[in-house]
Amino acid sequence: MSESSPSRAITAVELHPLGGLSTERAREVAARLSRRIGASCRLAEPANGHALLLPGRDQADADALLAALEADPPEDAVRLGVTAQDLAIPIFTFVFGRARSGGQAALVSLARLDPAFYGLPSDEDTLIGRTVRESLHELGHVAELPHCERPECLMRFAGSVEKADLRGALFCEACAARLPDWLRAGRPDQNW
Image: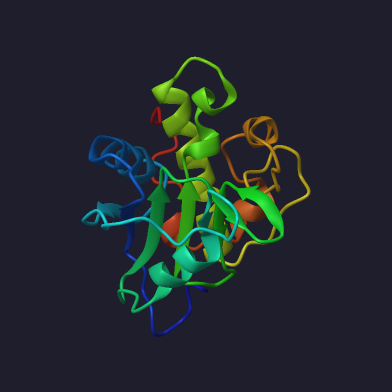
């Protein structure tokens, strides 16, 4: 979705809590994300119920959830679904998130971003920081950024939480130059 698209002038990211995400966590993700982007981040009402599970797996169907988020999009916002449920698609054992290049929405799961998933002590700050970084990555896809080869770029593909941590928290110079205004860093000097 390019900034020049006459049909959509994005001014907000609409965060939709899904699949057991607490209101407190949703508020914290929205607050931290608001400090990282040019658009405001507004919190939508939590959705009821759980997503359709993939056959034979205890994981939500990421593509089905993304399609539901993309249905009837608001004119001024990109939707960001954030869920506590583990996500997957048929060809991958899991995904941290999902978005279509130039799409209307993005989706992120906290399940495998949580240190507790790996048997480590729970760490809310690490969990929320990872969630914000993964949200930025997926929103980058919505803004038509492909995966980047630079190791330190937020748009680098990460197939594990360790690789996600290593890629850092910022877009590389080349990717940052392609960001639309709504996704540009709002106040990069702020702690997030």
